[in-house]
Image (cartoon, rainbow over all chains, first blue to last red; front, top):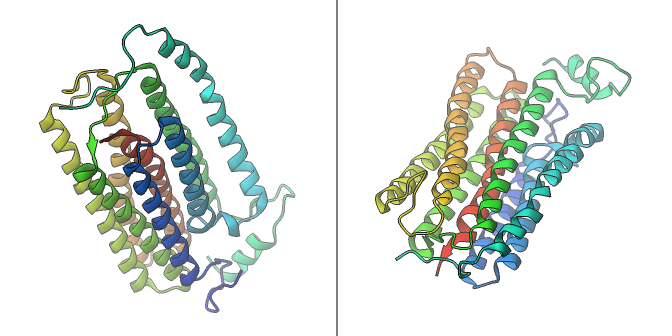
Length: 113
Length: 210
């Protein structure tokens, strides 16, 4: 990775690189908003949006937060444990599905007037 | 941070030394805070998802015009402030104090605009009758509770970030703080931006009123 010639502190990344990352972030945001116009099924929509948000989070952490330029040991210390803990939190969802299916009320979303 | 100090940081390795990750303790401290804050927001967003899953009559109150357009502008303002923060950190590492302060002021302006726009959005919803324990559209009152809880906590983070950047920019301008301090404040700012990248699709884009 190229770095500024005047940069003497191991701080990597050029203005051009950061500008490109930013353009990608705005572009992905644009695609997400475009999807909001489409009447996609909620689960498809959620998976697409979360997938794109994870990509955006990866770009922000890798470049804006410099994780790509840090030692790999730091990445291994911070990221897998965090993802594991978030994964553990999803253990409540099977019960959510059970509760949803036990409702006798008619399904569907109330639209605001 | 002197050059020799930077060399020590770069060359150290996992030998139980003072810098096992080749970063300073301030930066490591901020990263650990970010991990804990990530879990806080993850818990809140998963709670939101759980409430939504278990309540079939969840309200969808955001029309494309203006709520979605409005929140998209907020998102781009926040992303833009992240870019100016990156420029500020780069300027700090080059030792250009004036440019660093200018970029950080631009970042603070972006954060302030975000808070004002978000507060406007809140006022619209409050005028419509949305409350933390009730919503005017029928269905679960949990919408108000989770909406105000999550976006409110995020807005608090942005507001605190603007103050934090102000303190660091002032200190760096006067030569009291180092480039590392600017970089650490940048980590916080990018994290606040990162959280919004999940709040925006999950709360707004998943609740479009067609």
